Amino acid sequence: MKHAFWLSACLLAAPLVGHAQQRPEPIISPEIGTDHRVTFRIRAPRAGEARVAASVRPQVAKPAGTTKDEPGQWNMPMQKDSAGLWTLTVGPLDPDVYRYNFLLDGVRLLDLANRNVSAGGDVPWSYFEVPSSPPRLDETRDVPHGSVQLRSYTVSGRLAAGMTGAKVRHDIAIYVPPDYDIYPRRKFPVLYLFHGGGDAEEGWVRLGRVPQIEENLLAARKAVPMIVVMPVGDDNGDATRPEAVAAFNREILDDVMPLIEKNYRVRTDREGRAVAGRANGATQAFTLGLRNLDKFAWVAAFSAGAPISSPSFDLNAHVPGLLQDPAATNAKLKLLFLSVGTEDTRYPSEVRLDQALIQAGIRHEFHSLPGEHEWKAWRPMLADLMGELFQPVR
Image 1 (tube, rainbow, N blue to C red):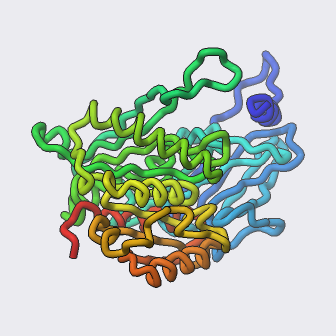
Image 2 (tube, rainbow, N blue to C red):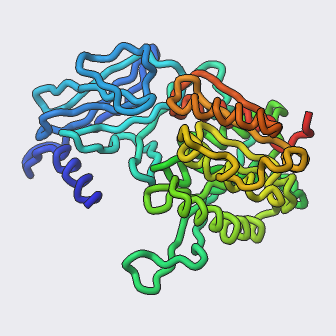
């Protein structure tokens, strides 16, 4: 059904071209001007309405009829010319990475003129970058670069629904720092980094800018070279259910970690492993890390989702035994890192968690910065965390 849904959008966008007609001129979209104004274009002569859903800032001027699509995302109408070309220009935009897609008569569609796509998950996104001078911390700079490797693995003990005897296979993205090839005898610490609901294994690479952030920190001598492992985190579309969180934790411990430790030169001591995540992935990381302090010494949660975001969240029930001996917990934890955007609807729940940990005597850091539930906030959170991971505890 999903494929048919997107196919209908492609048919809406298809021009009416006869055999005798010339092929239409290629579309440039998005076109980023020197003044940082951005123009989106899509040729869709059959569509009755076209809109752009994009992560522009609230203060950016928008056309009449704009609505808020989701946190950090604005739904803006386009204008159609006599040839069926829809256009929208917005800006100027601040230097940053922006995600967007088109809506043709309510059907979401990637920008087929743009090769930059964050695919996978529930909603694929096109994206673009407004450059800055000097380059931002999450922007590509002239520094040594590592690589991103894509692998797949079979999930232990799980069969694919509706496919007799077929095993479930998941993909995984692995960032390898430039030092990995330079120092062939060195073992590297590992950050297991989880995405949010509806995203996929490459989300942190494309929209989260993991390679750029780590490489720029390394060049500035502000981080330790680390391998970053980014697995698929959604389970049947809902990663918040307790049984789904438990199944994901088993998958990390039984399948992902053995895969990494067999095929890469990584540290296997608890001080050499960290786990972090955003949104639903933050709940997964918080649970996996704090329930397995014999395996992880560094734990981080950005804008945590359910059940942590629920007013009825019970820390003791979620991580049994964590509060019974705070001194023992603190002795094992190198870092417990919490961060959230001040405009995020989950900000109050993160404050409650912060206060619960303070009352329990659990040593941790609580960070807040401007932003909603959006990549604008998560990228600097990751940069702050990477600057602390695997460093001597101050």
